[in-house]
Length: 432
Image 1 (cartoon, rainbow, N blue to C red):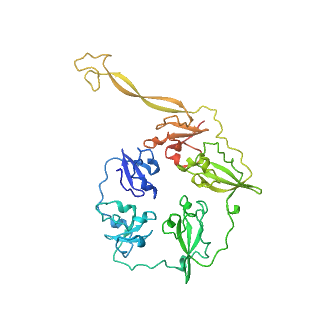
Image 2: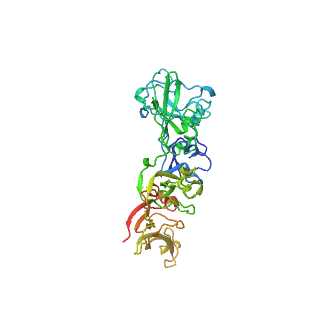
Image 3: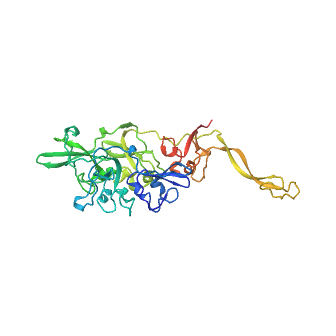
């Protein structure tokens, strides 16, 4: 790992024989910045994921292996410097040295036509181009430039949804569709689909045709024709209805965790309730902040709406209290001494000394004892082989290097099939 490097999404580096992978776009922009050094700096886990360990050094690869890239046929035009009015846009392609590059989405697309970002050919800034362009394949020959979007009937989505209108960050949700008019004579419209959360938060703030921000929240779905009758406000019938509502959200609670469910009352007459689920790490940190409570403007930062509910659920008080005797065998190395032969390795006596009980050397001896299996606690410095429980269900701390996560609150075991805690713990059966 080298600080200050422009790392691409999914790049891997090594630090102290541990292997880390850079996050997806746009979070990868933090991977080379101060404060994000993998495994060391305070915020490293916001941009890196530890994926394993390694030893030795990889032999540097030669020039790009064309056999491993996709043949895209004819080559698009060569890269050229652009002015603001004719700048490259998301998904525009250029060629360089027989390779094809695609311009990244906004705001990175703003660099695609700037000096210093020409793919692979700027020795003064050899890696800067990676911030703006993605390598997509190789090419042979050339092809004629395409015109504006081709309105292929086979790519039509059918009737056109409503035109886009501005709103808050929660006006549109993932999968919502809007239309935009491309030309009036002849009349041609296209449909756009709102991207997945959290990018969906941009859908109400940027029109899909906004050159600067449209691609942040919207993706082109296809052409459309005619119109769809407007739908009313969110219909509760469209939500998955569960039998029984979990406990209502409480602003005084500080122990909401990823996967926890809570109820938000939409109206009392008629009675309408919705169910929210606390998002996974790191967004679960918002679940315990009142400014992000379900039903608020920014609730989607910490909570995900999963359906409607009716009635009530009997509270599931944490797992039934375990009253049996549950232990595991833990072995540790302790310092000890043993009598040794004068002059032998580590012996306190020289060759000319008389052998006897005064001749000692330090050794390590393994001592094993039965330990009680207790509930997980943030005050314990867990290591490989330690066992904790929830009720009668046992969990064992993984081997190095994953054992470093066992003491982290975000990775503590739960009864949910949560992939996060699986990085640190293994299921270890049940207590008798």
